[in-house]
Image 1: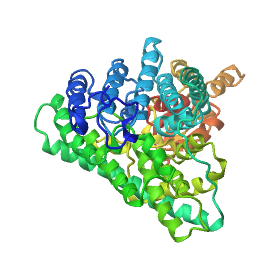
Image 2: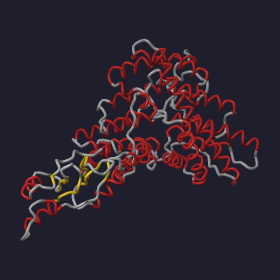
Image 3: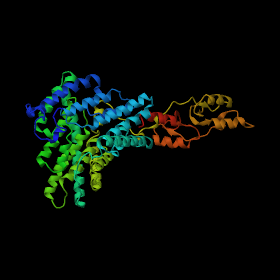
Image 4: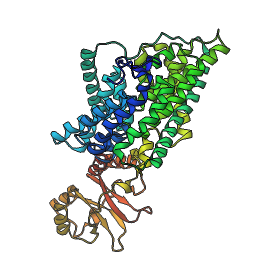
Length: 527
C-alpha cells in the first residue's frame, strides 16, 4: 500500500508503482504518514509495543512470571506492519516473537495457570513465531530456550518443540514449503579458508557489538532531542528516516531481497560497506523515533553485507584459495547474530536451516563461537539485555550463582536439649517439616530431632527423660553454600529439610526444603 511493491527494498531508485506523479519523493512522505497512524496507537493503547519487542518478553518472563497484557498482540501487529510498510528499517521477527509470547501468556491467564507454566507458554508462543516466520522448526525452540527462558530444562523443551512443530506445519500449509531465503550453494575450499572464516567471524562479531552500541546511542540522542508529545514523535522523526531512505532506498523495510543480492555478489564493495553503515543508522533511527519492529533481521542484513564485503576483498587477494564472497556473507550473518545477541546455538541452527547447507557448518560454528567470545570481551550486555539494563533491570542469575542465603526459609523455633519427650511430641505434631533443630543453653546448634526417632523412643520400654539422647546430626549447609550443594544435602537428608547454619557452623539461621528451592525457581530468582 505504501510503495506499490510487495518488497520495495530490492527495486532500486524507482517511484511508487501506482502514483507516478509523486516520483521518488514518496520515500520521505511514507514514514511520516505511517508515524502519524502508529504513533498515537502505541502511545495511547500499548507503550510496550514500541521498540523491538524481545526485551519486553524477557522482562515479562524474568520479572512478571510471564504475564503480558492481552492487548499487545493486536496493537503490536498493526503498529509493526505500519512501521515496516512505511519504510521502517526493522524486522518482522521481533514483533512476531512478542505477539506469539503475548498470545501464550493470554492463554495461560485464561486457563488460570501458575507462573511456571505461564512462562513455558510464553516461550511456546515465541518459538512458534520464529518457526512460522523463518520456516525453521529447529531454530524456534532454541531461540526461545536460549534467549527467553535462558534454560534448557527437559520439561519445558518438550512443550516448546511441540509448539514450534505445530506452527511450522500451519505455516507450511498456508504459505507453502519454499525456503525463507534463496541462497546459492557454497563450499569452502580448504583449511586456509577455514582460518579466514574464523577471522571474519571475529571481526563481524565486533560489528554486531557496534550495532548494539549504536542502537542505544541513537535512541539516547532521539530522547534528548525530542520535547514534544510521544504520539507525534514517529511522524516528525519519519522525516529523518525518509532522508536516509532517499539516499539508500535498499534500506526500506526488512530488506531480504537486498540481503540475497549481497550474498549473490551483485553489489560492489563500496555499496556493501555503505549498506552496512546505512542499515545500522536506519534501524537505530527507526527504533529511536519510536518505531515498532525487530532487530533480528537487521542484524542478519548487517552480517550479510559486511561478510560479503570482507569476502570480496579476500577473494580479490586470494582468488584460487577461496570460494565466492557470498560464503563469507553467510558466515557473517551468523557471526553478527552471535555478536549482537550472544546466542551462539540459535545463530548456528538458524543459519543451517535458512541455507540447508551442511558444508558451511564447521566454519559457521567457528565464526559464531569467536563472535560470541568477542562480544563477551567488548560488552557486558547484548542488544536485548541492554534495553533492560538501561531501565535498571538485571535479569536473574543462573541458580549456580545463587546462595542458600538468597532463598532459605524461616528457622523453626529450636528445642532445648533438656526438653521432655512429651514437649517435643507436641512441637513436632505442629511442625510441617517432620524435624526440629536442637540447641544447648547457649544457643549452639547440636543437631535435629525427627518424628520417626521420637516415635521409636516413645514406643520403647525404657524411654529417656529428655531428647538429648535422640539428637542426630543430619547433613547441613551453610548460608553461603550454593544451591547445588544444598540440593545434594537435601537428597541425602533423612527428613524433608536441612538446617542452615551460620558461617562458623555454630548457630542455626534457617531451614531449607525442596519447596523453598522450587518456590524461588518459580519466582525467577533461580531461573
